[in-house]
Length: 91
Image (cartoon, rainbow, N blue to C red; front, side, top):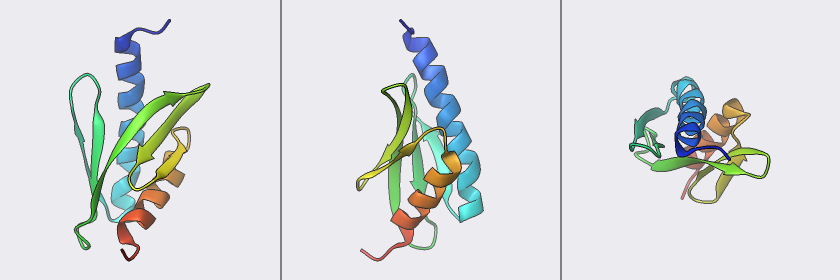
């Protein structure tokens, strides 16, 4: 069984990989939280924001964000595109 520390390191690595791609899409991001970090993401022009979680699911990890966003953590580039769409589309 993987310890909490291992999960925390994996979660952080996935969120950091995603955070590195977001500025290229015009988004800001900041890691928040302690042992279970999350990623606060915002669009400077629209003012819209969301929180991205990285969680283990099945044999891998997924990113989750509101409203209803989900993508494999193995594809942070695709997740960045999807989050951009979420934060720029009309309400």
